[in-house]
Structures are given as structure tokens and as C-alpha cells.
Amino acid sequence: MARVLRGDIVADALCSRVAEEVLRLKAGGVAPGLAVVLVGDDPPSQVYVRRKLIKAREVGIRSFEHRLPAETGEEALLTLIGTLNADPLVHGILVQLPLPPHISAGKLLDAIDPSKDVDGFHPVNVGRLSIGNDGLIPCTPLGCMLLLDEVVTEFRGLKAVVIGKSNIVGKPVALLLLERECTVTVTHIHTRNLPDIVRGADIVVVAAGSPRLVRGDWVKPGAVVIDVGITRVVDDDGNARIVGDAAADEMDHAAVVTPVPNGVGPMTIACLLSNTVKAARRR
Ligand SMILES: Nc1nc(=O)c2c([nH]1)NC[C@@H]1CN(c3ccc(C(=O)N[C@@H](CCC(=O)O)C(=O)O)cc3)C=[N+]21
Image (cartoon, rainbow, N blue to C red; front, side, top):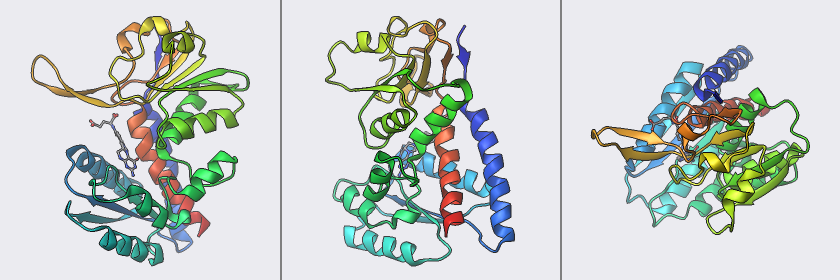
């Protein structure tokens, strides 16, 4: 049986360390603060934002919630970002994605002060990551690496295959693996012979948003599978649940797999809080 690497447990340990750091910062007169901007009423976004705020409170991070109607204009949002950039109580700014279609996410993310960009989506942080500098690193890719650190001792020379090329997960996680001197292959929906490419991998990171995309016979015995996929499905009994991108029941021969739920998702939130503390410490 593959070892099931529980992200929620690793995330709890990270949150405890973050909470200690918050206490240290507060003792030094700095109370870390996180602003969360949510535009519109996308149901999953409501769920994620609520979880982020609950966890922030648990570790002692002060949060500032800005819920705005879907029809809010770009100008108003840019003004809000400007206010948060200038607010000394705010160390981290998160604009929940996706945004309503009339708002340019690019323009908004560009407006965030890179030193407060706890999502790591600003071009300055993307650039820092690509040259291996010490910027703020996107939360989900960082969470994937912390999970890998639990089970991989030597990355150098390992073959890593990333499935998905998004700016939020695929590209940054590929850069982080490359920084560890893995041999990295980035694949996506148009990649030919995807199963054959995955069969060569020691590490598979799948962030395609396609349930059961990665089948058991794609995975080499002893490989580590990090499942970033989250898809909401309703099963035959009418119960809603979330499923990952890997066919979990076919992974017995893998060394390690991360579950969905309770895998990468909770790590994303823990890394957001860790990035907030990092941003506060640097002030
Ligand atoms: N600016 C921005 N930053 C983000 O980091 C961001 C975002 N926008 N938009 C949406 C995605 C998605 N995301 C998740 C966070 C936690 C879970 C999580 O905790 N998942 C639980 C289950 C949650 C459930 O039941 O739906 C789990 O996997 O166990 C999942 C997904 C952050 N995102």
C-alpha cells in the first residue's frame, strides 16, 4: 500500500509554527494582518475565504475582510488595493480568484505591493521565483514542496513530471522542482503520450482539474504522487464531495500519494498564513 501523506496534519504542524512566530512578532510590537478581498458570490470562493479567515484567527493573524458585490468596478477595486497597500496594519493582501469577467485580474494583481503579495502572483514575485530569489512563493506550489519535503530526502536528479501549466500551480511548482535540481517535464492538455511521460516520473504533481486523469498504470512503482486537483462531484447517493486528479484506488504501488480532500488544500491555507507572517517579519 502506498503511504497516504495527510496534508491536513502537515498543515496543522505548520500552523503551530506560524502561531509561535505570530506571538514573537506581537511581542516585538508587530501584529501580522491579512486583507482578503472577495468580489461576487462564487460559492467555492465563499468556502475557501471562510476557511482562510478561520485559520488566520486560529494562529492569531488579524484579518480584514472586504466582500464586494459582483458588479464592483475595476476602478473601485484598484482604489481599495491602493488603500490596503498604504495601510500599515495590513501585511498581506489576497484577492480571491476567480474574479468576475469584467475585471482584469492581471491589472489588479499588478497593483498589489509586491511585498504584501502573499499569493506570490505579482510579476515581481513571479520574476524572483524564476531566478531563484527570495520572494513570496505562491501558496499551493509551496504547499506541494513542503509535502514533498516530508517524504523525499534527495531531490537532485529525480525526474519530476508536472501536469498542468497554470500560473498558479503548474509553472511555479515546476520552477521550485527545478531549483531543487530535479529534471522537470511540464505537460498539459495538448501533450502527446502523457501516460508514457508520467511513467518515467519519480515525482508526479498533477494540477489539471480532471478527475481520475492519472491512472494506476501511468505511475511507476515507488513514485510520489502529489494530487492538486479539486473537483466537486455529486455521487449516486446525491452527496456532494470533492475528488482529485489521480485515481487514488489504483495507486497501491506508488510510494506516497496525497489524498483529496485533506491533501494539498489545507497546505495552501497554511502557506498563506506562513507567507503573511513572512511579509510582516520583513516590514
Ligand atoms: N487568490 C487566490 N489564492 C488562492 O490560494 C486561491 C484562490 N485565489 N482561488 C481558489 C484557489 C483554491 N484554493 C484552495 C484553498 C484551500 C482548499 C482546501 O482547504 N480544501 C479542502 C477541502 C475544501 C472543500 O471541502 O471544498 C481539502 O482539500 O481538504 C482548497 C482550495 C485556494 N485558491
